[in-house]
Structures are given as structure tokens and as C-alpha cells.
Amino acid sequence: VGSRRPHAKGPVSPEYALLGLLMLGPSHGYDLHQRLTAELGSIWHVSQSQAYSVLKRLGERGDVAVRRGEKAKLRRRQVLRVTPQGRRRFRQWLLGAAGAGARRVRLEFLTRLYFASRLTPKKVGQIYIAQSREIARTVRRLQILMDQVPEEQTFNRTSLDLRLRQMQLVRRWMQEIRVKFQIDTEAAR
Image 1: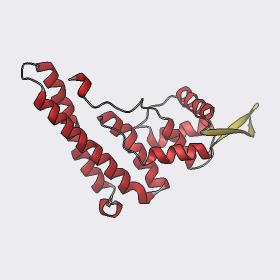
Image 2: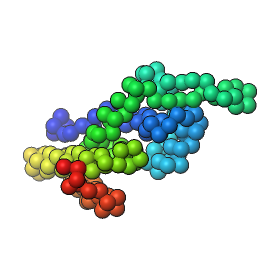
Image 3: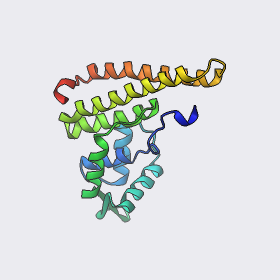
């Protein structure tokens, strides 16, 4: 059963949240962390050192460029901006689906929704539809798996039942999100 279950795609990281904040305009690392905490703090719990580590990795990858800014106290502050490569990666990520797990939906889908509403409001419906389809596929896969697991495999069935119920709840929550944010799915088709 374990090999047939859907797996998430890659690790969940706040890198796209930080990259998205830089898509809104150049900034300093400290200011980015403050904005992330203020605007997405209930979604992403990121320490300042973790934010700096992610920003360093984005710089090493070539998604973020650094230049020396104005002097702050005894040293010059670094101003970070998104490179063309970083813009491409962010836009590609923005239009994808978060994956099948409830945690990924909470972290990545809500982050996508936030940035789409700020950067490309016309794409919100498209992002919503992609995520809704991913959730529906996952619910169907879990139902099929549940039907295939023998009754005597109590713990496997219980685990699948929990995952199935979580995704059914997420599916209902997505319907509420569509109403709350007035997402026009017809216009996105």
C-alpha cells in the first residue's frame, strides 16, 4: 500500500514566499522577514536566521541579486532584488498546484493565492482550479486505495481513512475559499 500512495513533490520551503515578497519590490533581509511575519505569519513560521539562510540559498542559485544599499549604523545594508531567472521560477511556481497534502494546501496554496491576488489577480481563478483538481484527484486515489486494502489491515485502513477525511475536509474548505475571495472559476476556464 505504501508504494501506491500519492507523495508530495519536494520539500516545503518558504523560499517562494520570500521570492514573492521580492517580486513586490527590492528590500532588505530584515524587512523581508518582518513583512513575511506580518502578512503571512500564520501560514509560515520562519525565524529571522531561517529567512536569511533561504535568501542566501536563493542568491547562490541566481534567483536573487544583492547590492550594497545605504549605510545602517556601522555597515552597509544589502538590498535584495529578484533576477530575471528568479522571476521565471516564481511565475512557474505560482501557476502550479500545491500538491495533495493538507499541509501543502495550507502553506503553498494560500501563499500562491496571496501573491496571485497581489501580482496577477486575473490568474487567481486558474490557480484555484488547478488546486481544486489536484484535491479531487487525491480524494479519488485515496478512495480507490481504501477499497483495495483488506479489512484485516486495520492500521493501514485507519491511516487511509484519516487521510481521506482530511482531503474531503480540504475540498469543502476550498469551496468556502472560492466564496470568501469571490473567485470566478468560469472566467478562468
